[in-house]
Image (cartoon, rainbow, N blue to C red; front, side, top):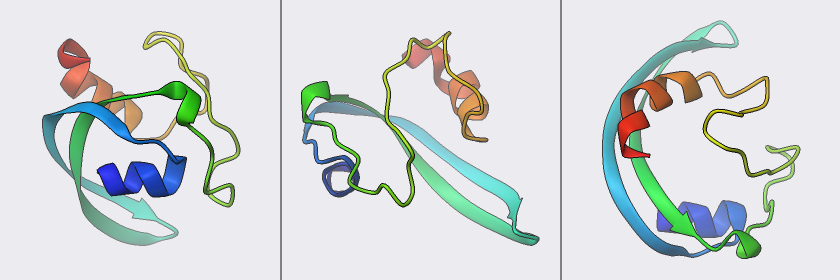
Length: 87
């Protein structure tokens, strides 16, 4: 997780806690996929964050938990429902 944040967003992890795991089954481009998500709550310095993968992300932003823009990632509602009391 620390390595991924550094590679994708150029920031270091100040603190983190493990929330849990999820098995995700969905269809992508007509093919069934299955992956496991290791979910964490992470504290970072927002001033360090940069988009190091512009081919994957159009933009980065900061939002309150009840004010997310549309469209959102398909897994966000599932993640939020499972962990809302821990965020």
